[in-house]
Amino acid sequence: MTGSEPIGPERFRLLAGFLAGRAVQVAEAAAGVAAHTDGRVVFVSAGRPPAEQRREMLVQSALLGAGSLEPRMVKALWGRPGVARRYLALEGRRVLADLAGRLPLAADLAGHEAPRTATADESLALAGSRAAVADPPPWFGVIKPSRRPAAGGPGTRATDAELRLDFRPTDTPDADEDGDDEQSEPSRILKLFDNPLGSRTLADYIRRLLGSTRSAGDGAAGAETPVRALRRAAVGAHGRPLPTRIRFTDNGKPAAAIGVGGALHPEWDVHRHRYRPEWCRVVDFPLAAATDSTGVGVPRDEVLRARLARVGLGPKVLRGRPDGDDLDLEALVDLFVDVRSGYSPPEHVHLERRKLARDLGVLVLLDASGSATDADLAGRSVHDHQRRAAAVLTATLAELGDRVALYAFRSQGRHAVHLPAIKTFGQRFDAAARARLDRLQPSGYTRLGAAIRGAGDLLATEAGTPSRLLVVLSDGLPYDDGYEGRYAEADAAKALEELRIDGIACLCLSIGATTTADSLERVFGSTGHAAAPVLAELSPRMDELFLSALRQLAAPVQRRA
Image 1: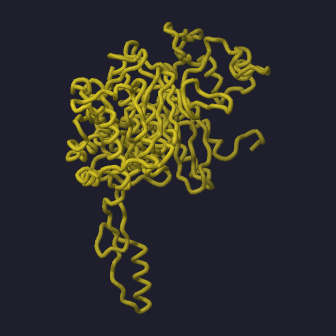
Image 2: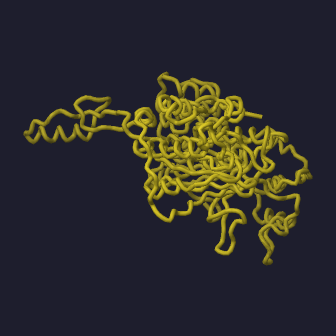
Image 3: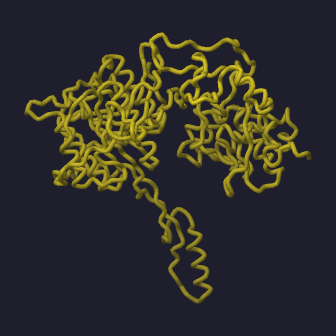
């Protein structure tokens, strides 16, 4: 072996690229971590002999090349480790059988047993059924849904056009005619030089020639790049541009926002059937503390508490039980030692699994826009009704042991969508939090889609629970500057669709408002929603509303135009 030849798992990079249908790296995983892939790197077990690492690489790369790890497949495995293991067993045997006729190494590994499925969809359906499926061998590795590749990015199946290099050398998109700040796709000529087989020196020279590297001056990165070769915003698994986090310095604050956080979110343009990337600035910030901590008390709703106690229960393992679902090996060893030592302990050697642990994270999003100042027939404002409902819901969920946060939302144009935090996930709903809620005054407008996207990010990053639910307390009527009618309703509905794809359920409660059922249906569609003059009227069926919203995550997403 010469000094220029790769050593370790890198030696398999060419074979991995051939199997995956695109350039991928091969590296060792952390000690004790099974083989897996994130779509860009194939990780093999650390410290194993080269022959074992090679067959681990072969299976994981073949899964990429066969489309077995496409986002829609991996999304269905999220939070279902048993199904993921069965799916890996079926797909691994299927892709090895497909390769057996073309690759002798695969033929040696495939064995003589015929695969039970012919497509990835069949494997997914069989994995989710009750049919018996043999466990995969350890060298198949694992599938990690949390590291699934983004749609259209590395790790997904190459398109026919990409395999044929079917594009025009001058094919670079023009700027949008409506003046949106959408960035265009990188030159596909440069993609040819990203292949690991190519010369890095040649690639660097071509990039400098086309003006796509940073200059040596003091200008900002990309200042010398031609206008027609800008980057497109990163795109998520559901096709929308990913949010861009806002970074503020000590001497730079947002013109219309408070605090130091937030992100730029896209907005759905129903008239053009596409997203406007980085269109809305959503800022979450701690609400200013009250001058005192004499927050008003929260009335107890025993019916609501009894109903919500049935929701959000996850499995808890109880050890050393007289009866149960499985043997407790530790208790069995202790029993054996005690018996050999002359004792006669009780034979409590079973494991029992019960639904006792709370596994639900809820973010209550309270409408604090100017429309909440409307009053009912008794003269009490919608804001008062919804603020009271938010307090009762938050206090009840926190008492039950759920992870719960309470945020308000309002907007003043697309550059100032505010999410003031009344109670974060890590805070208690104490007197200070209740005082902040009591002093919250409605103002501004209702850019509902941006608020939902911002709240969804908070749930995804801070809830820390397998089940997540967004409860929106609002009249459900989106309105802001340039944001009304069909455009606003379609954007809000699109934001809800994105939440479901991300594994977050949503429920809208319209308390004390006069919103019609048709208006709520246009915005929330199949998403759970209910309306009542006061929260107490919904308490007897709140468990049904919560569970119905959570069950919607398993239903196919009906995409809205």
